[in-house]
Image 1 (tube, rainbow, N blue to C red):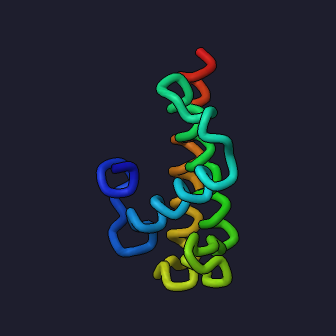
Image 2: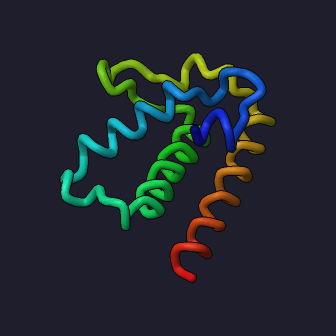
Length: 101
């Protein structure tokens, strides 16, 4: 939903598959008790932070085969990389403002 309805990539630079992998990594690396309705904005922030890092470094390990880099085939050029970085940073800022009041 974040990729398709909010980010709306023009090409396949960010896909729902990319977002799903980020969710799987978050679930793998954190206790299940940390995921509840009250922590939605926290995890959205965390996921966007991982996405921003993946875009800036062009590195995101594929969940099923961590040696594979999902960003290697992302069709992301330098201009898009900068634009996505700013867009995601703005989203993170909005989440912080909402979450922290």
